[in-house]
Picture 1 (cartoon, one colour):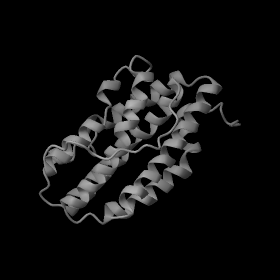
Picture 2 (tube, rainbow, N blue to C red; picture 1 turned 90 degrees about the horizontal axis):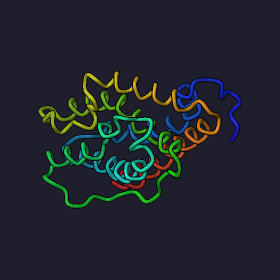
Picture 3 (cartoon, helix red, strand yellow; picture 1 turned 60 degrees about the vertical axis):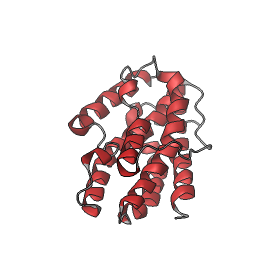
Length: 199
C-alpha cells in the first residue's frame, strides 16, 4: 500500500495511519474496563491481554532480539501479566492464547507490532487508576502491567520513538511497520471480542 505522506517521521505516520483501528480497539475495551467490579473481572482483563501479548512477544522476539531496540528484554509484557494474575489467583499453569496474530515476517513488521504493545503502556496508567477506583485496596503488585515502567514510562516511550525514527527511514520499512501495526490492532480487537464479549 502506498502512503503519500511517507516523508513524515515514521512515528507520526504510525499514529495517523493506525488511528481508526486504535480507536475501535479502545471502544471495545472501555466498557469492560468500566464494568470491573471485583478481582475476577480484573483477572479476565489481564487474561485477555496475556492471551494476545504472550504469543505476539514470541513472534516478535526472533526479529528484534539483537536489532534496533537494544532494551527489548526490558519491554516484555507477558511476564508482568502473569505476575499480576498470580497475585490475584495464584500461579497459573496454563492460559488461553490467541492463534490469529499479525503477520510477523520481518524486522519492520515486528517493530510495527511492538509499536502497539509499547503504546499500551501510555494508556495503561489511566487504566491502573480506573482499577484502583473500582477495587479499593488492590495490591500495587497486581497492577504491574498497567503501571508499565512507572515514572520511567515517558522516557521509555521517547527512546522507543527515537529508535523507530532511526530505523524507519526507508519507504518499504515504513509501509511494513504501518501495516503490521494495523493488523495488530485489528487482531487484538478480534481476540478481545472473543475473550470478553462472551462473559
